[in-house]
Length: 186
Image 1 (cartoon, one colour):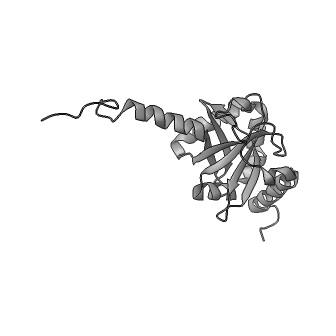
Image 2 (cartoon, helix red, strand yellow):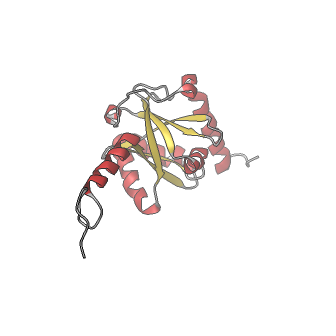
């Protein structure tokens, strides 16, 4: 058991508080059939529901603050949090605009999560801070200090990743030849 009033003690209390706020409907969320393939519905939203998966396939929902940039969402959480561990094991997640308790307020989108390397963290931190202003700065200086180190997560809709892969394939190989180009003759 963590020492009373230690960082670990505070982290457990904060996480229990978040768990108590979670809306029961969040445990049964599935992807919206024929839902949007982008994050436009997240504009002017303050919270998002992120659903990660345990090794046994059970879904675990979390309401998160986020920032948007270039069709992707950016999140911050504790580096050693369970959701980061789950994303390392399975980067496929569900993502939806929500209320503070995680109850979806729009389509639930299938996405891929990427844990950002250290050199990309400052950019992600700015994107999130810009989305919330002074409220986020206050949160970062108070509640978020219980985490030893932060992990920044990039959430990309699977439809966007597929479109980028198609565009890259259409450009052809790096040799400068496009699809259908004739092979070089000796």
